[in-house]
Structures are given as C-alpha cells and as structure tokens.
Length: 365
Image (cartoon, rainbow, N blue to C red):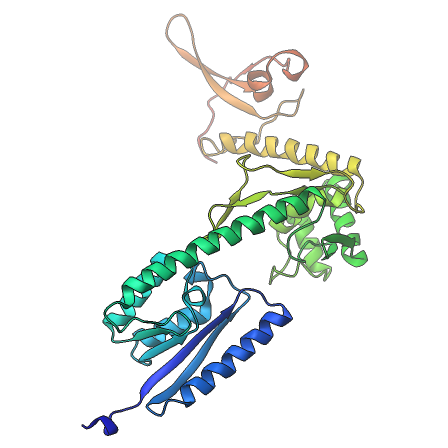
C-alpha cells in the first residue's frame, strides 16, 4: 500500500480545567474548538473524539473519568495518536505520565504535547517528558502548599469551608445560614433522642415514614448513620470546628481523620445555632451513656444466651457470671455487677454484693 493509500491516523485530544468556574469553562470550550480545527487541518488524520475533564485535579489519574476512558479506548486499538496542549494538562504526577505513555507506546499509540514540543513516538520523547513531568509535579506541589496556606488563614478568620451539604444550613461565601425547613427536622431529631429517649434507628425510620427528605447525597431513606451525624455535629449549636480531616499528600488527595497531626480551628458562636448549647451537650452525654451500655451488653454477648440481659437492681448495669475457686479447689459461679467490677472507687462503684448461682445456668434456650 502506498503512502497515499494508507489509512488515516485516528487522532483524539484531551483537555482539562481545574475548576468549574465560568472563565475556566470558557477556556475548555476554546480548547475543544482549537483541537477540532487542529485535527481538521491535517488531511492524513481522522477525528477520533475530544475527551475533557471539568473541575478536576491533574495530580491523580483515578479522579479523571474522561482521561481514563481515553486511555482505555486507545489501549483497545481505537486511537492512534493523542493530542494535548502540555504535560501539566495530561498529568502532574511524573510516575503516572511515564507509566501511561509507556503503555500506550507499547500499543503503538503516541502522545503529542503541543506546547512542550514533545512527541513520545520520537527517540528522545520519554527523556524530555520525564523532565517536563517532574517540573509539572513540583509546580503542583507548590500550588497545593499555597492553597493550603491560604485556607488556613481563612479558617483562622472564621471562613467556613466545605460543600453545601450540611443538613439544616446553606453555605455561601464562607457563611452558614439556617435553612428553616431542615432546621425544624434537626430540632425534631434532638427532641426525639433526648426527650422521647428514642434511638437513632427508630428516629431514622420515623423520618422516612413521615416522608421527610434525607440529606442530598444520601440517595436513599434516612439511616441511623445520618441521624448520628446530626446529633454529633457541633455546627448545630453554633460552633465551627475545622480541619477534622487532613490530606495525606497532594498527589492522591486522600483524606484521613486529623488526629492532632495538624492544627484544628474551633470557633464558638460562629453562626446562628439550630439547637441550644445545653441541648447539644446533653445529647453528647446521652450518646456516651448509651454507648457505654451497648459496649457493656456486647462484651460478653457471645458467651451465653443471657449475657447482657440480666441487670443489677441497684445501678442498672449488666450482671456477668464469674467463676470462683473455693479453698478446697472446687469451683462455684456467681453473678457480679459490672458496675462493681469496673466502677472504680467512690460513688461510681456499685455497692450491690454478688449473688451466687444456686442452680446450673443453661448454655442455650
């Protein structure tokens, strides 16, 4: 087959903007037009599509669905050449950039970085790509540090960060404003838990049965976890605790619980409260009390059918069966209050004496 008879090169383009602001989206539209015209200007090329990710970071490939689809289609043999404006648009992670371009090259797919004048099909393509990808990764690190510093300063001034998913409030320009209808639901949850002594499972069921819409991101009925999040969030009493989570590194953007490794910022009376501070504190104490009772029940629940079911008439804690050895070596069993065993000294310790089990205790019903 002569050169003129060769099949056209199937060419696709990739573009990305890091935010979804209007000016960035306009830039994305301009990039699309540029690539369409650029491919059309090459008679030996056939248009194979434009793939674009909006409002996503370039440091991690996993967070860019359009990029992943582009690579998958190229690896499957549907694309011969990928165009992108520069290395930083393709990947700011050096390892990802090299690994992906190598895999594509093995399948006969090249990547052309127009602004950087790098073509991975050429002999020095990988060498030049390594240098430019390292520069892009370092720039990403600096941007991440500058962004983080700016956020910390804003947090100190009381600017609230996050998305608009806090049930009962709307977040706009760093300010939390009460959403009246949802705020009434929050107050009802606190009342049901504290005054009516209902558990989170029952409250969730009642909200669902009443037709109350759950938080936006749930995608289903109310759950116990949703109710507990309302009961434990300090924002409902007007306080703001920021930096509950921290980012492990700028490449993966993975977040973990901030266990004190980074400074947290707590501002009292930061915004209008939905419930009183006394209500919130009472709920936290009640949560701790119920958690203690639950742990008390479950600690020995697997040993006997009655574990956690027999309770002390004096303090309400559960009774546990203990084996005691007599001086002659024989054993007998007795019920002992957990409050007596774990209560420590003073008033916390239950004063109820142990009761000997006078008859065999069955191991099952």
